[in-house]
Length: 72
Image 1: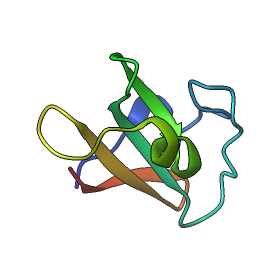
Image 2 (image 1 turned 90 degrees about the vertical axis):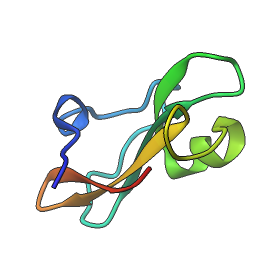
Image 3 (image 1 turned 60 degrees about the vertical axis):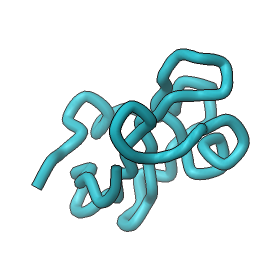
């Protein structure tokens, strides 16, 4: 299973929104409407993310403190 190691200990996303750090939290690593990619909370992904898949982004779910890729 693919993990998002560099984001597992991050306390906020690239827009300054705090992560909950709770089991089941969803985190995105995805392209934004602004062009660059960003690490995002679910709310920010809905607002500025462009999608999931090759060239667009990945979705991760927090499980026992680790972020595991589930889509994209």
